[in-house]
Length: 312
Image 1 (cartoon, rainbow, N blue to C red):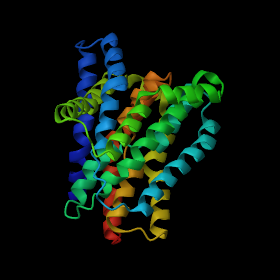
Image 2: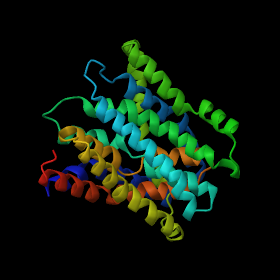
Image 3: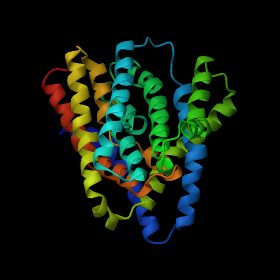
């Protein structure tokens, strides 16, 4: 019960902001044009600011656990490659393929995972959850761009894919964040605070916009894709990753952090990117909504089983 309360306290505010967005759109407080404009702002300004802040504030003085970092990187890449093979087997629409693929490997670690890690391992204070941001955030965003560009326009074009990656504001945000981190965050305090305030807008506005786009009556037509994707995101992916981690001897906080990296709901920004890169934004929004709605229970079960087995 304690684990359920803990994860619910992290997930429920995320879900409720989506509900507020849905109700505002339903009662005419925001229009489709408003939502579209806010979507572009989130993608081009607020999400990049959030990525820059996340990376530039990582404490590099904390020793890195390279085993865990490399495991996270290898696991995400493996899921991506397997998804490239698996997704086209049951989904024929290119606009949906990239969205489903993105949903398989890209969890909501930044918004959902880091706060949960900090709540679970507050007494440890090793800095591992923040260190994982160095691997998880950039690779999620790079592979998300590749996923959506891969199926954009119906034909594969390496040149177009590279151009899409080079023009993507989230990729540039990762680069800028890394540079600032390596330089010891040299921004003057007023500028650093400005980045922080812009970053603070990112998550709530992205969630609000996501909720405002949801059409509940249309969920039924995506039920096959949603069923497969939700089972993979919340059950099969974390189970496979954690079995391998356990066999490798990873325990304690490291195991818990990896559990949250691979078992968290779909990233909120996956919807924003899909909507801006010609993917099926409706399906992407539904993936985030449904995995967020059931994610608290799934994560609570994972935490409870791991604790009962003495893994952490």
